[in-house]
Structures are given as C-alpha cells and as structure tokens.
Image 1 (cartoon, rainbow, N blue to C red):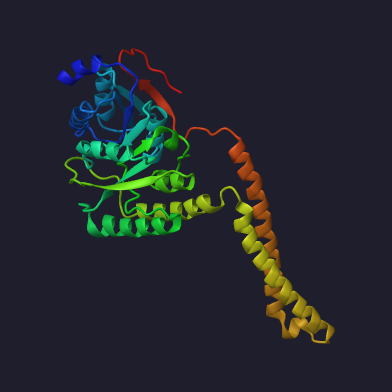
Image 2 (cartoon, rainbow, N blue to C red):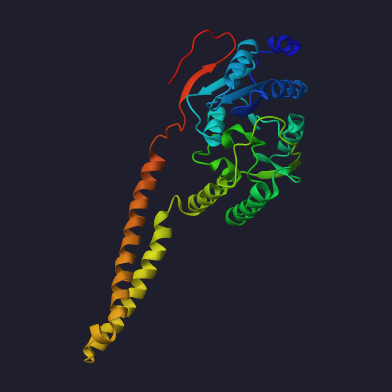
Amino acid sequence: MEIFKNAMENPSIPQYSVVVPFYNEQDSVLLLYERIVKVMQKQKFAFEMVFVDDGSLDQTAQILESLALQDPRIVFVKLRKNFGQTAALKAGFDHAGGEIIISLDGDLQHDPEEIPFFLKKMEEGYDIVSGWRQERKDAFWSRRIPSRIANWLICKLSGVEIHDFGTTFKAYRRDTIQEIPLYGELHRFIPALASWRGAAVAEIPINNPQRKSGKSNYGLSRTFHVLFDLMSIKYLLDFSTRPLHFFGTFGLLGTGIGGCIGLFLAIRKLCGVTIMIEHGPLLLMSMLLIIGGIQFLLFGLLGEMLSRTYYESQSKPIYSIRFVKRHGDSSRGGS
C-alpha cells in the first residue's frame, strides 16, 4: 500500500499516539488502520499507532502483526490472554510515546475522521477531551438506559460535568494519563480520576456508527460491574488517601450512640431497674453498636496503614505481554 511508503519517509519521534485495543475484530482491522493513517497523515506532527490485541481468538493478532512488520509507525502489543478493555488500554498507554494520546475502539463504532476535532480542543489547554455519543445507535433497554443511569450517577458522585463516561474515544496529555492507575473497569472513570488530580476535562460530540461486523462484548450484566466500580471509585476519589475519615465516621457514630444507650441503661440500673428484663433488647443494641463502632475504627486504622503502603510502594502492571512487535523485528520476547 502507498501508506507504507509514506511511513518510511518520516521516522521522527511521534507527537501523537493513537491507541486501539482489539478483541476479535479481524474484519475491522485493515479498514480502521487505513482510515487512521489517512486522517493522521494530514496532521502537521509525526504520529504512531499502538495496536493492542487483548487475547483475540480469531485472526486479529495475525493481521496486526503483519501490519506492524510493514509499517514502522505501528507498535503491536499482544497480551497473553483476554484481560479486558481497561488492561488493554493501559498496555497501550504504557507503550505510547506521543505527547498527545488518542484512544478509540477497534470495532469501527468510532470515526477516526473525528480525531482532528479532539486535537483542536486539546489546543485550548485541556488535559483530557472526551467524546459524547449524543445519538447512540445501541439497543435501548440493554445499553442506552443503563448507560444513561450510570453516566448520571458518575457525574453526580465525581462532580465532573460530562455526559458520556463510557466511550473509549478520548484524547489525553501523556503526563495526565500516565498518572492514572488503571485496573478492573476503571477506564470509564478516567475523567473523574484525572479531575480529582487537577486535570482540565472537556467534552465534544461524536458520531456513533452502527457496528458492521463482529458482535459486542458488552451486555446488560456489565451494568452491575459498573455499579460496583462506581462504589469503589467514589471511595477512591474521596477517601483513598484518608480511609480513617470514612470508616472513622461510622465508628464514632456507632460507639457514640452505643455509649449513650449504655449510659442511660447504667443510670436505670442504679435506680434499681432490672435491665435484662425491662431493657434487654436495648442492652443488646448498645453492645452491638459499641463493638461495631470499634471495628469500624480499626478498619479505618488498617486502611490508613494499607493506603500508605500502597502509595509508597512500586505499582505492578495489570497485564502480561506475550511480545511487542515493531517494524524490522524478527524475534519475539515475552514477559
């Protein structure tokens, strides 16, 4: 292809990195690649493409490897198994060399032709620009309704005023995305996590074309995963560095109420009342509240110790790479 010839003429350090995770997308790879190249060649700075195969079971990995051997702008990262979208994106971010990193899905439900709109918005000084699927083409009950609920909850809990947290189509400054720890399903919470660290976040509308090949890897059951992650992200945003403030509140509340009830029962006992007969359930409640409160305080103290250990220790990758293939490589290395 002509695009390979153009690639050889510009081996400079990339300003832009386009990160795409793939999972069983063999019918989309070549077309998406050609569309990305066509768009990015019009930019004034050099670019690279970081393609991550997330343990595909079809021919996706073979096609990506073949492209990587022909085009020096491609970095192909093959994961050992299907680790999920968050891990695949994290692998792509870790291997991206550009100052601006653009991520999008590999199923052609994002238009690469819209990448310049993200780059233009980034020029206004934002650290993250997120896409907003204003007119979604997904199933109404199983995708759009749960998505709207989840996006509303994330918006209210995080304080980040964007409409669509779930889309992968985003642009990041390199120093911003490298500061965000990713695991579980946290890729959808990147704007919230980044905003908590002081990043400026913006949103632009994007198209949401119908999926033309393959099948979606998302379903209604994923909504429950999002809800669980939403609870954890709320804790991470507000209390990850001060867990004692979270657990301690419940601890002091429990011991305080239990202590007051206990004091009341002690006074009644001094007045000659038989506590176990007249106030047995109240005495039991007092004991449970005091014991539960003490446990919450201990959880908070343990959380403080774990939090300090976490932030002072080296982080480990959440994925395992089989090999990384670049133009001209003839050997495979694993880790």
